[in-house]
Length: 456
Image (cartoon, rainbow, N blue to C red):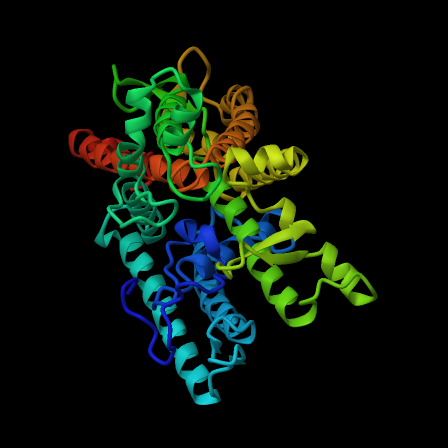
């Protein structure tokens, strides 16, 4: 579907404004195709329900199978409504308007708009069903994770080895090809700083370079290392004498969930901000209602005279849109600091919320250990005792992990990492989840008695 263009539009999205822009790698979407919306509606629906549940605006008992089933069903229904909403927002915002020879924008007819909306909704429902199919044990993991990992891997490989003809300053698109093309001055004058700078860094042009490649590799190694950090609580199995193990509490206790929700939140601010700006405040006036629209969500300007892609210039959208190169960071370090602060706070908030609503808090985990026949070695088999032990670690790693994961994601964006810092974090976590799923399948074959503890 990512290669099938939407029937009824006369362009593929090249050279025009993209409402999602660089955030598409996170939403697993592709401009002008059936996956125009990607997993954005699904993640947004989950974000809304998680916030409502975490704030106790809706009461959900996740230990009750009926409540869990109702919550999952509500998430699917809300995902369909969000698909319809975002599809209508794209049409109202002029995402498929065509510019004629006189420079005027022509809106598609009502029939064409209806046909486009039907295609977006049907494709969105198919994505929801694909995700549901994998979650119903027809595959491993979730469809959302698979789509994100595939999109990020594609972006990393293409940014590294993209063999496109010269796109700027006579250089190729892929970082390796561009470096090989620029290596001549370096070899002739190895001591020249400007020659090395020109070969390794493209000066904030937005094109992949070797600095971004080294950052990508460094972030991968750092995340893999941090994923291996954990506190192991010794446990024993009461039903089988001699069975001892360790209950791991990982440094990234809530995995990549905070980053997904934070990216979805910032992405929706960016998306809705463009729609409001183009429709109600295109001149970025600072009088009356437009004054507040200039603050929230903000004002947008084209990237350049030849590129119609809109980027925020001030307001909330400006401070929630990542500067994706060292040059941009140095031009406005206050913006970079504010962005990192907001992003880290969002990650911490969603980490704490997910621990509560996802059944990962100390009380729920202690109950799971007791129900599965486990106990902490050296302590009596009591839920209260186990909970006190877990309280030493879970709240701390939740907050610190959220801070670290948010800082790494934002910092990787500042250095121009391929696939964005958030995308790399998600991909590493997703690949590790698939590895854990395969290991878990193997363990349950060897020790059938641990199926209850593993939730199988």
